[in-house]
Image 1 (cartoon, rainbow, N blue to C red):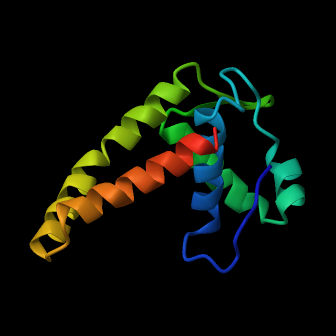
Image 2 (image 1 turned 90 degrees about the vertical axis):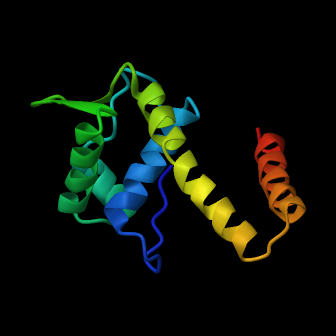
Length: 126
């Protein structure tokens, strides 16, 4: 369920956060569902429990999950909407990137072709 790339420049806790958010967005982890315990996930992916705790704390602070002392960490009811909202905020970064590409001489057609290629691959994998 989880895979960690030890050679990645992305910190391990961020890889865990990203993977949990993707599982929620895909509907694999549903609202109210309990995440694996820190200890079990630590053993499963061979990562220090403090790193797992840091990832869970980040998800908690984003409102994606909620912790119940003594019971564990659970997916919040509005988690998918929060993830989608945060993703939409990245559109401004995309706008800036497209403007930069256009100024650098990349054609509109090449940009659109690239976006179409990415979205069609995503649709095929559904």
